[in-house]
Image (tube, rainbow, N blue to C red; front, side):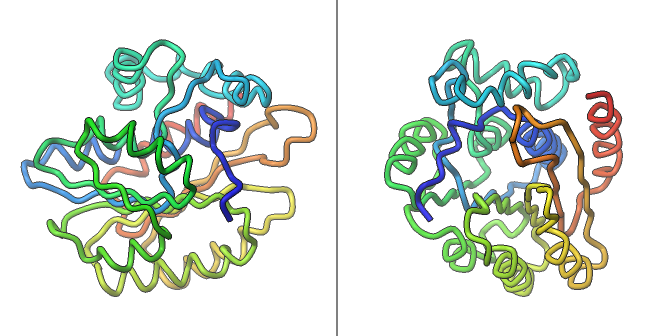
Length: 258
């Protein structure tokens, strides 16, 4: 579907969970001199204004990054990305995952991001153009299957759907299994929401059967406003990098204080 726009939700607690993990993983990967490939299936616009009417309407950023930014010391990879984003785009700016990745990668790394929504795709092209990213205006699953295995083979795929279509809970595991068969060395990370009906549970059970060495990390948090359905955030990682459990534990300790 093409109705989802992340501007209403940018900087929420799920973004904090996802982006703080993403920045850490890419920081670890770029410690090695070898180049890497970064792929993302659902890019959004890549850059958001937390003072926009959309962000102010939902209050999710106020209950998210605005509330918890002091969790992250200045040397933390996520804190560095936030600081650089504001330096480049102003104090109200917030990076989506494509910009988080772009600010962590090096000139020798390669990056390709898909976005099918026309307006979001146009904005993504504007926001990522200075970083040399390849923008694919097509279905993210199609891109992932077409571009894997990438060159260089060392790399990372982020799958971050809107979850507006219920059958994604069945089709996303299919995608991850297909990509893994094509690119068995790639790190594959899936983000999913935790909702009251636990619709994610069968999907995660299947992923754990398909990838017994995968790494699952979930955090719970209060609703951003009365009636808000999301009550937590999950990440499932195939070929998890070394020490990701330490980062997950560090984040979990902070989320339980909310």
